[in-house]
Length: 195
Image (cartoon, helix red, strand yellow):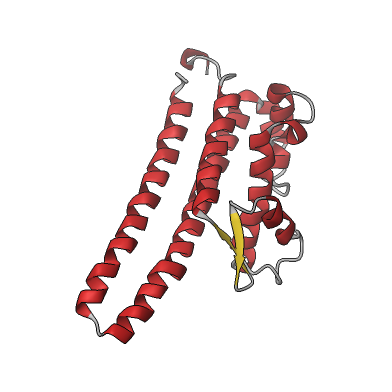
């Protein structure tokens, strides 16, 4: 991985993982301060909020940031590696559909059925859409059966109070699969002087 575009993508993904881990630790450490400074009944309620709601919101938020960085990288790769497909692709289609010519050329025919990272990211895109368009409410998001994706990836996602949530493992999986896909596609990048 020598290309600056790949290096930048990996750096951004690493920073997001680091941000999540530091914020998780801060949320965890805040419990001690809360116990010391508040009456027991108020402290318990606030600690539950930190441990449950804030932790889930943090994972969901960082998942969306990781997905945003991946989308940026895929658009840049598409622009460089498949300029005609980039110029002719409609903004009305989803990004993964717009990138299909690049995926086929680099990863082989029908990569969505053979490439584990692309499979994971395709499902993650549906989780992303549910988080954005219905605040994760499974019962309000009708275009995809989110519960099927959650059942297929039980360690990565969960449904809590009718909302899909990204688990800590799901966030880790998203970072790993994003790195893998960018590395696979980035191997085809021309040297800097050729851009």
